[in-house]
Amino acid sequence: MTWRKKYKQFSGQPNFQFLISLLDNCTSKAEVKKVLQGYNGGLSSPSKMPSFAYNIPAWECKVGSKLVNVVGSTCEKCYALRGRYNFSNVKDALYRRFETLQGKFWKESMVLSIAIFNHGKNCDSGYFRWHDSGDLQSVKHFSDICFIAEMLPEVKFWLPTREYSIVKSFAGSIPVNLVVRYSAHMNNSIKEVKNKLQNSIVIDSEEMLPSLTMEGNVCHATRKESSHQCEDCRKCWDSKVRTIAYLKH
Image 1 (cartoon, rainbow, N blue to C red):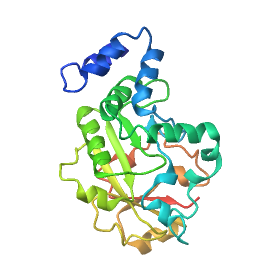
Image 2 (image 1 turned 60 degrees about the vertical axis):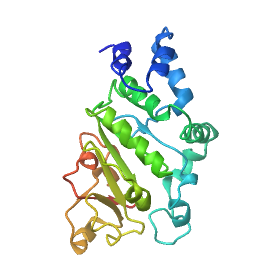
Image 3 (image 1 turned 45 degrees about the horizontal axis):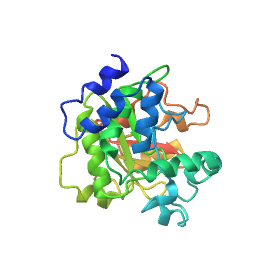
Image 4 (image 1 turned 60 degrees about the horizontal axis):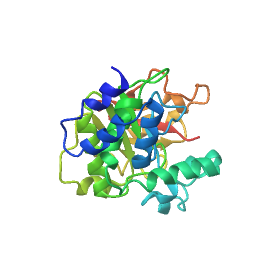
């Protein structure tokens, strides 16, 4: 399917006509990318992931900004507050996306961006991750993400979150192709998420799994001897996998 056909498939959907008319005036895929980026800030491309993703600043996390000051929490040494995330170009991109969340056509432009650009060499177009940095900002934000999943049923979405209250406050139905994983607040703890359908925790070592008495899988990308990439693993996107354990790194 050509890039024009990919966005044209949404022509009959409400609220898509304006964006589609803008894209019709584009003469190249690069122009399309620039137009959509003006409404959603653009997709992110984390090297670990099998596909594109979408990240926003971890500095703006609601729960995470409190946990970062709690000893032993999963956010205490947050990777998204260190290293390259402090580079000016990376930080600018994160806030560029963040500032579009409340804008008009954010969710529609995201549908089009994922449909058009979430493919290519070394990209598994059937998968997409929300927030390789950052987290949910509001019930509306979550509602918009659900809308995007509904519009792209052929894509499996994974959303890790510590914003339990936002998800609980959502009055609608979560699409079957959107796996929401509740992330435990504290390292080596399952108590906050043990009753959630899908969840994730951070552990100090694999030997801790039996003591946690859970149906879990250790993320191979967090093992020291691994490539630190998902490779062919898609367990985080699999609703049948109850718990994913990430080794602290």
